[in-house]
Image 1: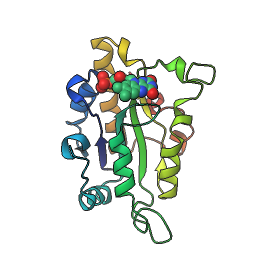
Image 2: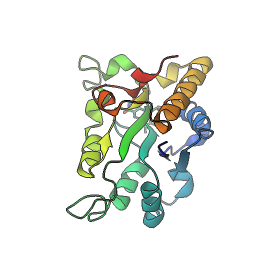
Image 3: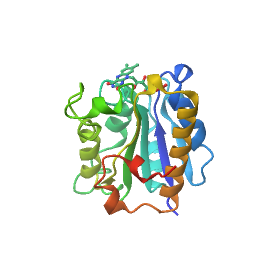
Image 4: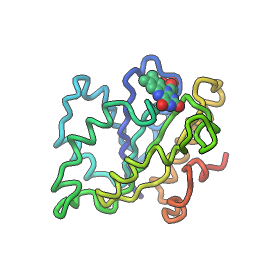
Length: 196
Ligand SMILES: Cc1cc2nc3c(=O)[nH]c(=O)nc-3n(C[C@H](O)[C@H](O)[C@H](O)COP(=O)(O)O)c2cc1C
């Protein structure tokens, strides 16, 4: 079994359609801890010791957030800036996170076809996520492709419920080590592993 830590960041959960459902779905999966960063730190005053302890206690770290300006909401950046300290997370003696896995779980307003080189966003989602990929690499972690839900504005209730159920399946597969990591690293999306 692997333990999963979800670092959840949504600055306006009361207005959320998609992430609210996703959050609810993941709370019941065994082996998963949800850390709601905006709820925990409304003043952005992150408790670094608490966050580092949580990281140490888990094998797989998920950054779960809506896609904002081709990246994450500000809280994720604040969390990275404060928690991933030199000499702890990276650097010659910074080995706290070695071998842990990291991935993003993302919802985007833009449709899937917009996240292709010929699409209006000009870059793929994986290309936009390069800073996360490299951050994980610098911390000697294994970066996995994202689980993504595109086109959120047009999703119907049943479609959203289906994505929530897929997210739950993914979490179960991760906690029970059912995903071939080498194979996963070659994919564009973790969604590819889920068969409805
Ligand atoms: C400040 C802001 C920036 C956004 N930037 C992007 C973006 O860069 N690309 C995109 O596809 N959608 C963008 N969106 C749309 C959100 O990703 C979308 O509304 C969200 O994923 C829906 O999830 P929710 O229902 O849980 O809020 C943005 C929304 C906001 C409020």
